[in-house]
Image (cartoon, rainbow, N blue to C red; front, side, top):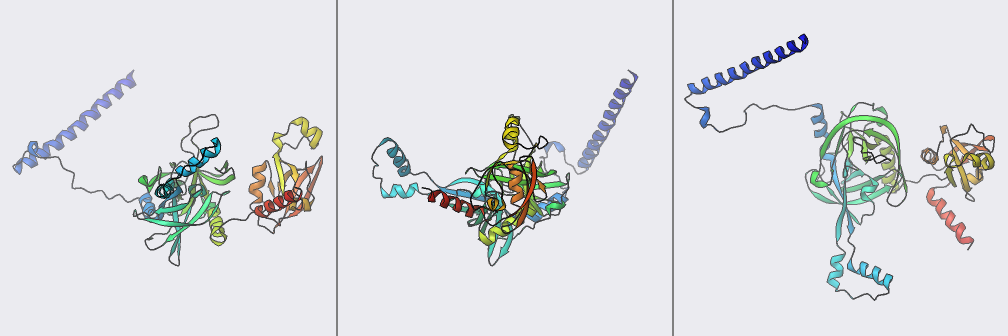
Length: 419
């Protein structure tokens, strides 16, 4: 009780002293005004003449990079009346009505389908290059870029890669004044500050700045694109606010360098629990590797093994024992379901029911591990693949002679030859 009484007294004393200071200040102000012959009662409220110059590390970083951040607009053809009548006519056996030519043309006008962000990273021969996400530009019939000054320009797609969720655009560099630089994402530390810049909810909120920290490194994020393709990112996790429209914008360190391209956020867990502060960016070292290939070839050619596969965890213990016959100690890996003829896997001697546990020096726990590890190699490389064939552990050398595209072509030829 004594402690509480003392606290109360201290609180009152503090209030009294504070009140004295405030009242004293007012008294001095009134005295000063009365000497000038003015009364405060007939004066309008005005802002103070004292200016506070805010110049922090964050403001310096933003000023350095903000001019290179753009909004990316995905334009797509509107669904025309002709298309709809043709669709329903074919479904219900109705004849198409002839539409006036003017209506047909107006129906084909481009409309904004979605918006995202991007960052200018290079100027060369009168053109400026922008990196953004593949899902920002996917399905576009045309692209536009809104510069930091609000000027809207046409953009050309240089190349895109679904697996890494990256794309490169180029525009006329006439109005480009700022180019961002990439930092080394391998050097970032958990807990260091991070700044995200982009256009959440579209260009109406262009160049929105949010600040947070690096929450984690090397998060494996695997999702499906709208086309059903696999998207796999070895991501930087941050709690800087990232919202729809931030996709493709930069994540920046305190040196004003781009250390990642913002790509994904988690808003709900698998159990539908609401989540805040879980955004993910593609590390800059991975970005640079991909965009160099996109600039050169417009696509990324990745090696193919030539197998269909299944996580070992999906196979029941009974099937593992009776069909695969692997040791009970083998709890993780990838089961080879089938091997494509003339593929690198077949030439190396892999067979159905083999259980792959390592590629190169990397342990393979599931199909995502196998794919992401395989894609670290180039076409033409020879890699060791370790697997179990029943209870025997073996390693073979696989020469990666085929790309995914060539493997698909080979599969189609093989299917056609059997028709």
